[in-house]
Image (tube, rainbow, N blue to C red):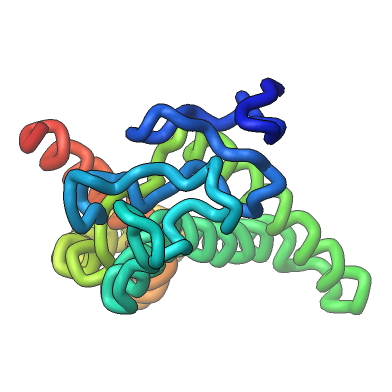
Length: 223
């Protein structure tokens, strides 16, 4: 905490492009209007010493930058919302798969109220552990990727992963079911149904990871 121009300035936030940090009392983090993509001109200056208080909101002063246009604010909001889109999809898919797993393990128990409560608690624990491991070190967080761009990458990955996981699950289920029933026709039918149904819940999580890897790789290549 430092005293600058009669104001207490927090050192927790880095300096803006103008060289000033901003006070928490101003009600805003470091001024985003000094971002080179948002500046209207090179003469934008910090108004931290201005009696008007907040940076960029005193349009009457020379060099002040007014509030950014609505379409820019909308774009910034959309990017912020899409940052965790892959994580949300992965978490929901992981929760669905956890419910199926717990049902498979404990499905023979009596379906009472206690059973359903235990099912919900166990599924949440399993999904939380999986998400905690996958989301470590900022994985599956998207930066600077719009929802439209994410959709263009995610949907083809989702289709491909659904087909691939359906074939894989069908093959595994066929081997397991045939080993129990020794009936080829019935085993194949049940295995296909299992592969098509389970892939609906498993494919989104895999597609989230592959889409994030693809977008990260493209970002590194652009850089």
